[in-house]
Each structure stands twice: as structure tokens, then as C-alpha cells.
Amino acid sequence: MTPLAQTPLAHFAPAKSSGSGCKRRRRKPWDTERGGSRERGARRTQARSWSDSLLFACFNCRSYNAREGLVKGLAEITRGIQSLQPDVLLLQETWLSDISLPPHLDGYIAFRLDRGGIGGGLLTFVKSNLSATVIPGASVSNDPHTECLGVEIKRVGLPPLKVLNVYRPPGAHTRKTLNLDSLELDDTTIIAGDLNLHHPQWSKGAPNPGGTALFHWAQEYPAVVHNVPSKPTREPSRARPSSPDIVITARSPVPLIHGWDTLPPWGSDHKVLIFRAARGHRQVLPKRPPHYVWAKADWEEFQKEVEQRSPTSPDLGIQERSDRLSAAIRSAIREHVPRASGKRPHQPWWTQELSLLEKQKRLALTASEGDPFDADKLEAYGQAKESFTAAAHLAKGTYWRKVVAGINFGTSLSFLFGIIRSIDGRSQRCSLPPLLKAVK
Image (cartoon, one colour):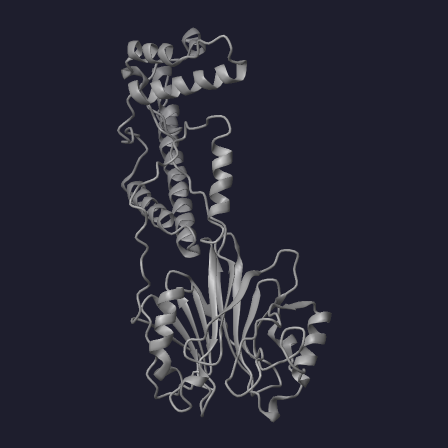
């Protein structure tokens, strides 16, 4: 077999959703009406359970053309991808060689394994917005005829997902027991492909020796073959339906995949297997709370609005009165208290290096908010935040040592109090607390 190769794709662009055309109001920090945020959060989590998962498609494309394999059937596969838009596509029997031009699909990265002779071959397409790397040395030991291509996909807040694309020819020389132990199946591994292993537990008809061995191995491991006999994965025109294409995962209290099903074939007698796996946990990125300029508030209008919106009916309970009064105060704050411009007050310990690091942190945060499931972007933001925090701590310490070295009997308490406030990130312009005034 030829060594694994990673090939960029540039032929197919996934269709973009037009959307409803209206923008949903972003929840503000002060929107904490009774029963609101928690219930809305639960509904949002339930509604996005599908959008936060990875869609897999597995398909044997051997039957397109015995000589050209995937190359001739690429048009039909492209049409199928345009309709399905999977995040990960697993193809078996590509029949590609060293001199074959790689198929190009815009928006995807290809991981390719050729047999090196006639037939066979594997391709794994992963969307370019996912972080994926090839797993070196993924193979089935003591079985040179079984081809295996492993790809690891990073997930946010979850362990990486290991996807093994496998093809096992149906010839007599491969009917010996398949050593699946060498694939190191665990709670984060998905084995999918055309293994030509048949058993009544997941396929119609009589079992073959490899299928019987897989059935006993799955009982002992334990593992799960997600196929069901009522949905065969191959329906040839001159033979009975069967299920050579299967999906295997380890048995776990929390299933690794869900939604297993079959779709009509893309021009072949092999159907398309689809299933989903968790993409990751959405990361809640930090946001600065709103800062109001209370000294510039219009308190007369503030009082009028609060009095106008405050509950007056004697029939209301204490809790409802409290909720309505809180809502009136929040509304008055939004209308009559101006917000700060967002500019950072001058800090004597601030340096040019901190300005650069803060800009890098802000850019990394913006990139993470644009794609909250990208583990690399989230890691880059974490590193930028740590660099900025360490540099700010060092700058504050350096400035404080310089101030302490210059303290004498003439140094005022107001000056020292302002310095301490600036190191704490607040404005130096303030009056002394009553306790310090008494000391002074």
C-alpha cells in the first residue's frame, strides 16, 4: 500500500442556508426575569442537539466502474454530498492509484490510502472547518488484505474522535478470523466501512465465518454493531440483499453515535450509511459586563419611569411585585443611564507590549466566537489569554516595586491609594475611604 497522503480539496462548496432574514435579540446580562433565562437555555440546548453533532456518511463506491472506480462516479457522489452535506465522508474501494488524480471537493480535506495495485483503496473526507489528523500505523495485524485508514478529529470539551475507515475484500483468502483487537476499540473509536462480515444479528441470510467471529467478539468485548437486519446496506439486482457495510463502536452507557440509518445509493448497489456523533460542548466564552456612567444619569427621568412601571395593584403577590419592580429598574437603567465608551482608563503600569498582547487576545476571542466548536481556535484563545495575564502581572509588579522604592515621609496616602486602585485595574481618580481619612 502507498503511504497515507493528505490532499486539499477545491471542487464542491456546501450550500449556505438562507435563514429567516431576521435577527434574534441577544440576551443582555440584566435579562434575568423569573423563569426566563433557565427555561430559554434549556430550550436552546434541546433545539441545537442536532446542529451540534457531526454527520457521517459511509459508502462503497466500487460498483461505479471496475477500472476507474471513484473517478467516474465522482459526479453522482458530488450531487449526493450537495444534498446531504456530511461533516465526514468515508469511501471504500476507490480504485485509485499513484497516477490517479485525487478527487477535489471544495470545503473538505481528503485523507487517502491506495492499495498499490488493482482495486481497493480508501478515502476519508473531513470538512475543512474541523481539525483532523491522520492516525499513523492504523491497521489490522496479521491481515494484510484488510485496509484501514484512521483519522482523529478534535472536539471541543470532549476527547478526540478516532474514525477508522475499513475495507475487507470478500475473497476466500480473507475468510479467516479478523483480529479486531489490533484496532484498539475504545469509547471514542468508530469503525465503519465494507467489512463483508455477515450475521443474522445485523444482516439477512446465513452468517459467514468472519461474521460469526465478529458476533462472538462483540459479545465478549463488548461492542455494538449498529446495523439492523431490516435495513440491508447492499441490494444487488441478481442476488439477495445483505449488509457488508457496518458500523461498530464500543458498548457504553452513553452511546458514541446515534441516528444510524441508510439512504438510497448514489448510483451503486451499496446504500449510503449515515449516523451522527457529538461534535463537542459549546464553550461559553467570557464577556465583559456592561459599565454604566452613573454620574451622568438622568435621575429625574429614571424615577419617573420606575414609578410609572412599578406595580400598584393590591391583588399582586410579593414575588410578582418584586419581579415587576426589578424589570422596571432594569428598563430605567437602559434608558436613562449612559454606558461607558469602552476605552480603558489610563494606567501608569501599562506598556506597549500589553497593548499588543491584548489585541492578540481580542482577535483570538473573536475567532473563537465565530466557530465555538473549533478546538484549535479555543486553544489559541486560551494561550493568548495566559500570555496577556502573565505579562500584566509582571508589569504591575515591576511598577509597584518602583513606587515602593520612591516612598518617603512626604508621600501622601491619596497617591498610594490611587496607585493601588490602578494596579487593581480601576481609575486612580477617587477620594480616600473614611477610614484612611481618619488616619490622615
